[in-house]
Amino acid sequence: MSKVKVMDHPLIQHKIGIIRRKDTGTKDFRQMISEIAMLMCYEATREMKLIDVEIETPIIKTKVKQLKGKKLAVIPILRAGLGMVDGMLQMIPAAKIGHIGLYREPETLEAVEYYCKLPEDSHEREIFVVDPMLATGNSAVAAIELLKEKGVKKIHFMCIIAAPEGVEKMQKVHPDVDIYIGALDEKLNDHGYIVPGLGDAGDRIFGTK
Ligand SMILES: O=P(O)(O)OC[C@H]1O[C@H](OP(=O)(O)OP(=O)(O)O)[C@H](O)[C@@H]1O
Ligand SMILES: O=c1cc[nH]c(=O)[nH]1
Ligand SMILES: [Mg+2]
Image 1 (tube, rainbow, N blue to C red):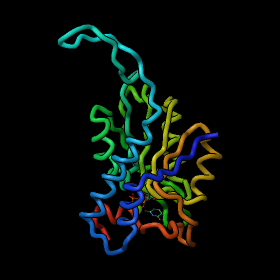
Image 2: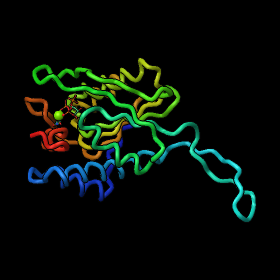
Image 3: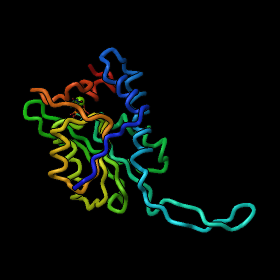
Image 4: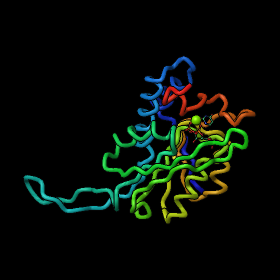
């Protein structure tokens, strides 16, 4: 079964309190999403594997630690996931970025794919799929299915706010994918929105409503 880690770092919790407020404007909302992603990235990469390599300092040869294998790839689910990319890149500047475009069909809440462009060597990389919201779980499940079809093996999912329904679905369909969450909320409402949540993350990041 996958690991589900709710990030309890005080800075993350404080910033989540700011993005939940309905009177937080686009500029601050966008900045907070990016800062939360950076802090979550720092925590979520804690168990990355290291190898020893020999280097020369100006004084002597010595062994240092280096991340094992290729650098990560970060895959935002469009649109709202884009808001988390800068924060991830502040921690891992060499990460490759792929994009998966999905929107929720408003009636059925099914995820509809409209775009996919991944780094060529994605199947050799550890991948972080990022999206601020995990509601029904349909979007995250579909994005990860797509990655698995393309041969990606090691996948993590990171979101800022999750509903229990989405976590349950992810664990059922993708038990091999660890999930990192900023805050685990109470439930979904009749329209599939997270309660208490923060509204529509994409609209609030891009100022489209
Ligand atoms: O778990 P789910 O029920 O699938 O809901 C979560 C999805 O809904 C939102 O995207 P939305 O469809 O609003 O697209 P947007 O990012 O373009 O606003 C959000 O960013 C997730 O991708
Ligand atoms: O509460 C929700 C649910 C899905 N997508 C959002 O942006 N917010
Ligand atoms: Mg949206």
